[in-house]
Length: 73
Image 1 (tube, rainbow, N blue to C red):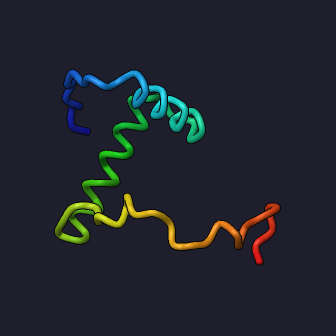
Image 2 (spheres, one colour):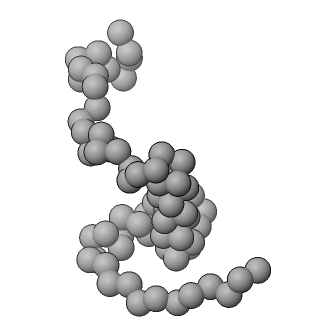
């Protein structure tokens, strides 16, 4: 296995806390979560020949009313 490179990374406190929470949900360390996410982005780029689509930040395409009271109509 190739040696891993170490790089300094500066994150805002909010981003770090969000990543830490997500990492805990996925049973990973924060470092492991960042590495996993970067690997997924690189795989997606190789697969599609580009960056992750702009639609990633698009609002979901459903009406809130459909999910009132926790029941899908």
